[in-house]
Amino acid sequence: MINNPKTITFRYGDDIINYEVVRKASTLKGDKPVRAKITIKVHPDCRVVVSAPEKANADDIHQAVLKQVSWIWKSLEEFKAHQDYVLPKRYVSGEMQFYLGRRYVLKIIEDKQASLNVKLLRGKLQVTLPTFNDSKAELSKALVNKWYKHRARLIFQQRLKVLVPQVSWVTDLPSFKVKAMNKQWGNCSPSGTLTLNPHLVKAPKECIDYVILHELCHIEELNHSDKFWRLLTQVMPHWKDVKAKLDGMAELYLNE
Image (cartoon, rainbow, N blue to C red; front, side, top):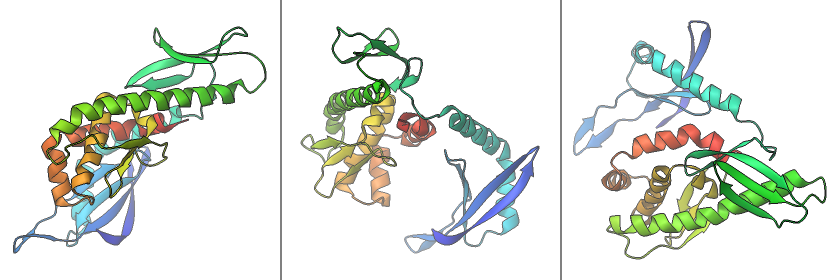
């Protein structure tokens, strides 16, 4: 990529759409240059980024955007709706929680005789706690996050056992740790240790598999090289669709 992106603004109906143009340098395949294409991506934070070849003129880029403007507008509306829906959690009964791609209603039960407990029960994530002070929201949050971390360790271990045999370059189950992160679903250290975000357990198993396979590919290829993407495509041919699904729900899954 070439730096110094340029932002263009235009009107679509009653709405204003901004898009950022980022120029792509030419690449070579053997001795021959590979012609780059104009690509458009709408991000969950409502940024529209257009990647264009160095020599593409502004009119060609804008025409490419106009051809996709209906899709761009719909994508922006969907992401805006997500943003309107994502409010800070208060950890009170009636809030929405996620687990393995399904929605559950949070139910807080106060019982002086009961012990602290979190469990899934008939479409609800039920938190039981004694009524001894006014900090029940903080206590509920701590209990829910602890429950997610526990479930994440179990699910990640299960999925690793299924997925590792599918990648020929990994012979043993890699060690992994669970750590909450704001901007990453996972990472892989140079030594091959995986770090996985416990919030990932809120996503469907297919999305969990995508992140784990992504990090397993990094055991063979630490950088996002062409070889890396070939490996990922080899083990999950439809990874782009799965990634798009995960990206589309990221704000909801990461919301605490």
